Image 1 (cartoon, rainbow, N blue to C red):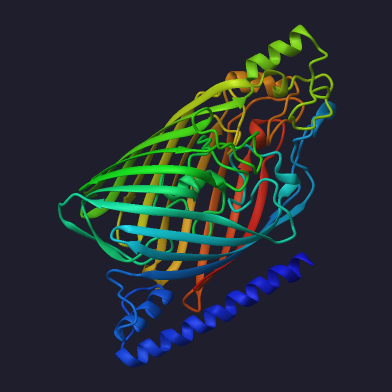
Image 2 (cartoon, rainbow, N blue to C red; image 1 turned 45 degrees about the vertical axis):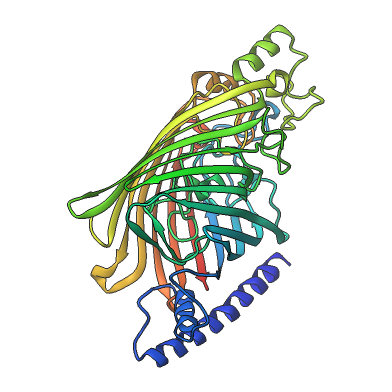
Length: 491
């Protein structure tokens, strides 16, 4: 049933793809040469523009879509123990298969001078490895959502309004893309965004690592693994962003709604009491004639969450306050000899700071590096169980071997946990994703290699290989080898 539903979505994507290719061929025939832009849907916009039906320089509207299917195969791996003492968050050491299938439509509309509205419906079906447990920040497929199901679910992922206030300076061109109307803007400007979106739409963006549908699959490369950004179980939230752009500099701040409880879908709209705040400073530069950027990001969350040291202290003072006796929100552990974060939840803060660097080495090759330190005192609330993270890598287009639309990448990510977090897990505690019942702490690490073969201009077929060491920061288990395949279509 799941495969047939995913197949139906894919068939619909291919039908739309065929329409796009057909319109594009008409555009080519009319102009006598291919359109300049690589995106076929953009070619359709050019076709409409040539006939006075669409202004690509100041788009009144646009529409894009995508389909992505990712399948992962985990090979069996060695484990000294699994779910020891009744803890429940170990990854199974047996062979498993996981998948995600998603289809998205992006619609943009110009409202008035400087104002844009975006609406993005999406459908997704998924099956994670081991119920999405047993990995800290190196989750093999960044499309996976907490609380997802193998039955396709339709939902609104983004709905927001963006207002641009011009302040002068030089003129800069914004190309027509998903979540971006084609237009020319001032290099000095203020941008205000309000609505429902993921904070990663605007923060911690990187040209070479951050798009699970076209680049690396592993979540360690999607953003900082230690960035516990406020969001619901799908990764989206409500809130506002303010940006100041001044030539090569940009400063942005945001406040977002957190989930009502860790890793759940409903969000808490009491933004004056519970929130996720972030601030980012960005500088774009040119080095040896090639573009690059440096971004410094800091975040501070105020949420109702448990502290690792207080959970340990509560259990030491009264063993009845264990992982099986809490009646409030908990992770359903069966370990009566372990502490639980349930007994330490109260108003707490979590903070972190990270650096994001990207640099093009040529027109076809780019490198990236990220690193973040979070305080590591409180439970994961919305993203991964990692407290400190780093990643490096490169991506390349296939121009040197006459495959200019192919993409290849090689990356390495590393994650660590704090001493208090490690002590809690060693005592048998679990959090939203990890907890084997015991722990010999080690840095969780992942190496990923992928090659994406461009097929029929707007369809890519990807082969992916990942090796994850010390899964869930536990040197008693692993390493884990995961083979992946992805098909991605744009229209």
